[in-house]
View 1 (cartoon, rainbow, N blue to C red):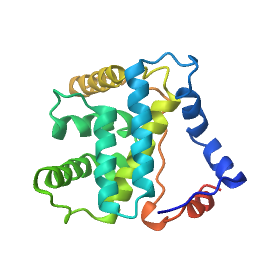
View 2: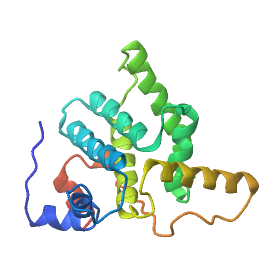
View 3: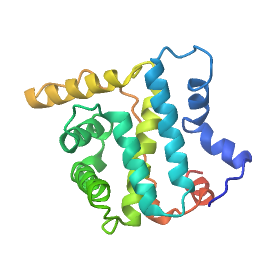
View 4: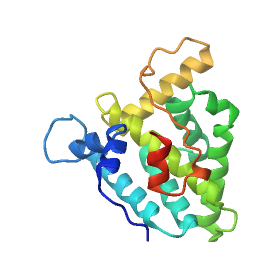
Length: 203
């Protein structure tokens, strides 16, 4: 198990991201007008991501993070292999990394590996880089969802957002629905193995 130290460095790091706003969001007050089911989904997603991060088994961590990705972006009737890349694209398709790193294809590969685990009990094809990549992706998704929670007040709003962007893409229209303040970062997680390294990276 990995431990965390709550200190000024920890506080300074999280002030740059969404942790403190997330705490307000999950509190008992009504500052943010979101659906109860969506609040529960976000809460459970964070809990599962925390469990994955504290695990010493990166393959199990990969599966837990895939569960979070599906919780945040899909509904039961969806064809996950098609929908997951499209809904992730709605959040980070505007970045150069989306194309250069072929993230659309990566998500398809992650989903295939997830199915191998769930249906065949086969963890062999999961790498530590897979785990770090999906963990980073979920961090970015939660960062954007929490920072724009008044825009994404329910999972249905995310689905609507993604569908509109896909329609504009097919029709060759200019984007009219994407928030202009969406966030992205590339932490080079293959080189970062501890919280202390992350603090140094973002200084």
